[in-house]
Length: 102
Length: 102
Image 1 (spheres, each protein chain N blue to C red):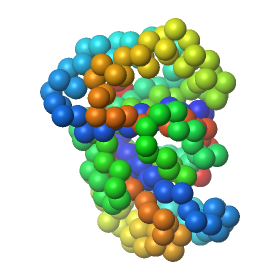
Image 2: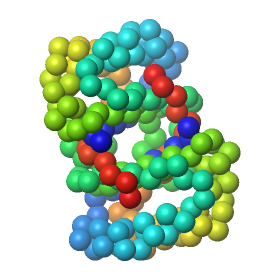
Image 3: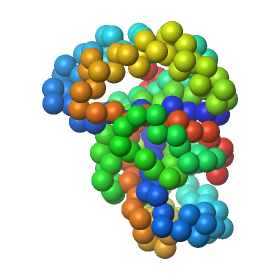
């Protein structure tokens, strides 16, 4: 599997962030081709250790890295990326990698 | 599902880190009860945007947050946590959260 992990920093206005994410960004991101699963956290993560403390963690899984790259280059992927500045002003990290069972 | 996301910072000695992770940490972590899946990235993640740039990303999934918390409190979970200082001197973030489909 190939994964796109999206870590959103703590927003200045969580209610506005949540609204935009639910009402605008999810519908856009759901149109990305080749997505096998798209999950988000139900409440802000508990930071058990360390310094990384995202507000929202979204995970999109694809069958292969080629499928992921094709998806991100598609009009739907570009539309999702273009929407980020509309609600993720506090910053967002996008990590792309292949996974295997440990 | 409930998830434990472990983000390891870039190690000073990647070869030593890889060796300890593969030969010591995975066998310890595999004994944690209730783990439904345990995946790691096959190569360092590509940072497509942002400032979070981990070297290794491990994901352990559990059926529920109660199962996750019980697992982390178990002797096997405590043994895995106790092993972290042996190879993750560069720092590690542990994030705990429940997920749902977006």
